[in-house]
Amino acid sequence: MNILLIDGNEKEASDRYTKLGMDTQFQVYENILKKYSNSKINVTTIHPAINDNYLPLGISLDDFEAVAWTGSLLNIYNMTKSITNQIELAKELFKRKNKIFGSCWGLQVLVTAAGGKVRKNPNGLEAVLAKNIVLNQDGQIHPMYKNKKKSFNALCWHYDEAENLPKETKVLASNKFSQYQSISFDINQSSVWAVQYHPEFNSKWMAGLMEMRKDILLEEKVYQNLSEFEKEKMILQNPYNFEKKEIQIYDDVVDDEIHSLELSNWLNLNKNY
Image (tube, rainbow, N blue to C red; front, side, top):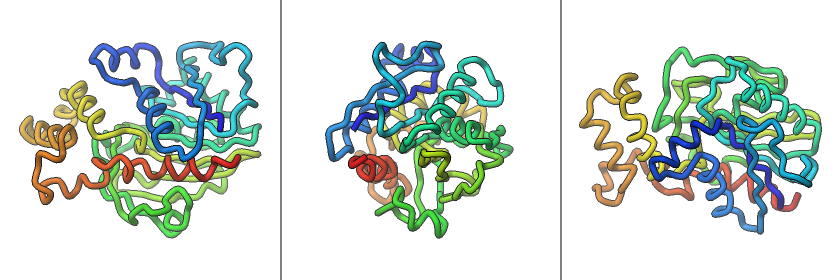
């Protein structure tokens, strides 16, 4: 299966990870796709926020059976060239028979391109853990959530959320922070699954992101003090150093297989396309 992976970040954002010795968001995504596919996949990564001519020579959008879209530091309502390039790309992909998965920013691009609207979340920053995401009736029977618990926590980082959804969108999951934690919709020939959290992230990478953005997390009162911050970071970095009762709320995120189930379900449903 040929998968197109769309990196939502500008170069400067990706360089921040590289300078700290971390994988970029698109490298994290590439790794998880390859880890959990039950069949051979070829992943081609493109960077429309960096280059106008983002398709490699000799490659067409028609060459792919599935598309995944990463997160990003961008805010879609700013409508810079890096953003409009991605919206126009999504519209082009909708014209083809594609199975599309969007994480966080990916959801926001896909919603916007399909006629919806994204806003700054009035509840503020939701970061590190999206807690108590609950599947509704549609979510419980949706193939994205095969073998997933009805209520779960997930790794996340976002200031924005969908406000208005494209026509005939199914909402699959919500929590107190955001009504639209997970959605699916069909448009033209394409089928879209999208989540506001990050099933592609892993707990150790998130611990690195926490350290990178420590000042933001403390300023935004995601943690009440440095001690609280350090404890959660240590749990995510090395959960097996703690007693099980201390890390019970992290069970959904420290086990990659559980945390990335949405992506592995998507991959393995699409392997025959």
